[in-house]
Length: 374
Ligand code: MG
Image (cartoon, rainbow, N blue to C red):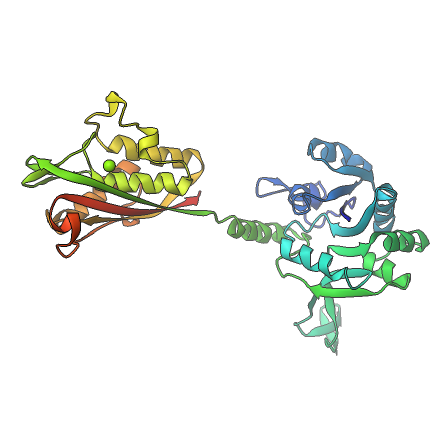
């Protein structure tokens, strides 16, 4: 069973403004039609174009069959369907090139509905009151009961819609009209308010806002570290030198809190841990200041397009008391990572004198970091 998608982009509608048809205008970093084609990736894809736009279509460099459109929308779709004939296609989805925000959910609903009907399309019930009018004056009202706004993709059994288009004279508003004229049953499934057809200049701003919301890409990582106490008179915790009757033993400066935070960032990136990037076996990191590690992790995140949304470090020890130093620690970490201090939390707890931290044999730290695609 092979499903194909026909994307109609042969129109030259210029209502959206500019000298280029709306489907060939940029939207959030790529052409409208490129967004639309991406929604049907994995299917056999056909793009109908105005002959003048063929170079634009070829420049997309996508695995897409490009077909010249005809004089009408129906003629363009018919050309595309004919181009698919004999290729073993069983279902075909026909979709407006200017609807780049179609969701996978809507596409799946249409495909699933084709199990029970020769045709299926998304629709939304009309909820606004309907008027007739002329010259800026309301001339009457209409009952909205039973009225729907049609969307695409409109899906069909391939052989049925091929026959319907071959038999259809002239143009049609959409392929459901062509199918129904041929006597095919067309079911409707729930559409999506975000599946807008870019028509007016303001639609582009709305589409960009929707895409931005969808692109929210949040990554969360955790880190945990332990260092044992040894002889000494201070410890480094979250970048702050804290006087104490002992020191922390470690290959570097043993800043247990900063190590946990560094690991949390690597974890959010799914890029290993501190020992992998700075092997303890490598003498060049002996006694190293831990801000080198944290700086490396945050730089790696930025190079991958992520910004730190927030982080939270918990130090687990009976002593030294962390509270008096917590704000200095937050400021130090924020400074190293070059982020606002209100994105950085440092807090502490004891383990109620239980376990190795309770016996004051060492300090444990845990951290969470959230990265968001910038
Ligand atoms: Mg460590």
